[in-house]
Image 1 (cartoon, one colour):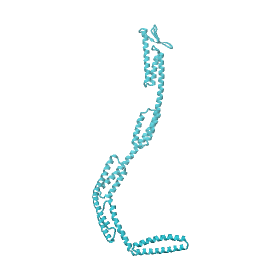
Image 2 (image 1 turned 30 degrees about the horizontal axis):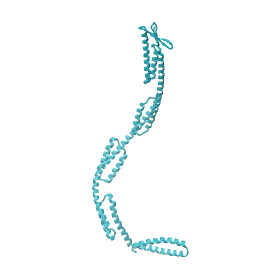
Image 3 (image 1 turned 90 degrees about the vertical axis):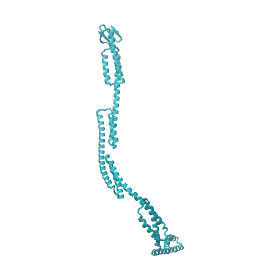
Image 4 (image 1 turned 180 degrees about the vertical axis):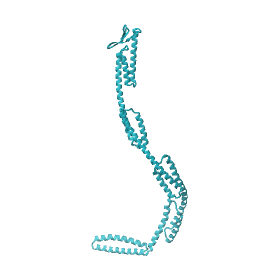
Length: 409
């Protein structure tokens, strides 16, 4: 019979393992010596030790699921419980119990982690839904559309929730995207209609612009082109494939007209510059008539100058006020000389002025006598009142005397 601290072999070849509950039969060995029998079952024990060590490492260092770990533990425990090895089976069982505790702990950790991830995923998806519903009302079609597509990618990367919660949130998310797409589609359909209306309106404007390009009615046509440009801007943009071509035709028609007008105006400007020189010479000649000493001669000379002036024609617009102002100054001076002469030689006006002066002189003399009488009577109040009236009459008399002097009287 052979034995060691954990097992023995009896004379019949039966192998036993020692446990806390007593010896347990491991198996029977008939092929060799008892020592070989114990060595065989001790190797099976070492195999279990290695297997447990590997399982402990997997539980500690890999993402082995609790379910798979439990299955592996139960498989090893079954081998231990069946006593098919010689060694400290209780120590192996204790290691398995500790491993079970570790697996249970990891299961709880993973459960808590999963719950946390689920809460985070729920919060993230609710945030995506809220943002999508806000974007559904946006009119920033390009940026909002791109953002909604990015939200879909983000959604796909998040863990799923329970089916009910996930389906409810996805329904809101999908509805927001659909609402945005529907609004965007309606917007661009309306925009297409507006652009088609703009194209038709601009076709009409181009046709009119081209019909006016050879006009020589410079002022009226230039004004009409300005109106057409205003209408063009108000019409809005046509489709991209039409807009540039319509604009080139519209602008080209204007260019033809304004180029022709420019040539004509260049010739006209040269002629008007020459006219300006002639009118400036006449203005200088007219200014020599001042001051007016011989009214009849000045009047005749100015009439002759004015006839020559009218025959010359237009001058540049910006120079017109100055040169015409010089002639008007001379003309007003002659007119004032005529008015002065008329007043001086008009007997009726002189008689009226003399009569008014005489009346005022009588009134002034009368007031002076009344003031003297009031003073003599000691009525200063009346005298002061009459004195104020005298000041007004005296002022009128002075003015009338000045007018009478203009008549040479």
